[in-house]
Image 1 (cartoon, rainbow, N blue to C red):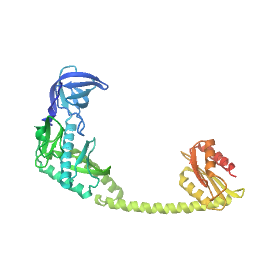
Image 2: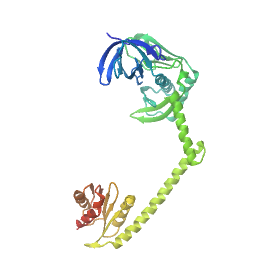
Image 3: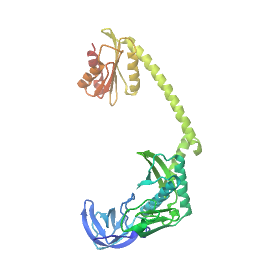
Image 4: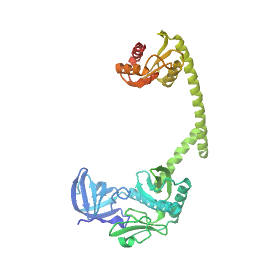
Length: 396
């Protein structure tokens, strides 16, 4: 049976290798190439596949097919003997993230008894899902601190193989039920896991582990984290953002949270004041419009079109008009989309829901409501005045 010798199993730092093409199959992206051996890691176990070149041709994807590894290329290599080159920066980044995951998962288990049920290594950050949605903030900090203490110890990370029967007797962080020889990754004195991924030779290679975000979902806690160079890049981004905020606020970095909270409260206070003024102005305008409105069958009908900037005030004016005795408001609002707001004194003679439906049926748009209040819109701006006149013609 065809078999690909996986060179990364024994040497995660191997970036260049020679191999022979065993066979080539067509693929929608070009060619699916199989080798007698490879240093390219295929996507599996939550870790993305490697990138690089094979015979100088870019490798688009690497797929685990059980005993074999398929390399997706845009075209087939011309020769049977080929040289492979791994993208070293991507490989080492994945080594840092995956080793960091082992440390963080082991730390959560040691500090709180929380087990990792899944792991995903993303393009900018990675996540682990813990088997509880009750992981507290202090427990997150404790696990992060413990994991980083192991990083700073620069403990050895060893990779070795054991028969499945023997591996199942070892103190693995997560049981394995695979058959045959099991690949084990051991962090000296801290963690032992069955894993096929790529890892740093010592925990110091992880650099640092930073938890970035915590979410609780469906009985689990999702912990987002970054390691190594990713953590450095994120720290630089955070510093740049915080510095810009401090510059805008004319304060020091350490005072930004307090200043933001203060300005947010000031903004809420101003918004409340503005809202009160708008409501007062709407009441005054409504009273004036009501006084000037003509009567129809004993009901004063206010009809007007307001600019798009006064959409919120239009609703307030309509309600204010409806507070008057025997009054109806038919208000249009310009803009994209346009708006229609109909309101009347409680228990008025008209059914404004029906008036709205007939109006939008004739002029376009959509809308609906209740007996005393309806809203809609979406008709052309140049039809607003005609639509309001039509609506008034439907009033009893």
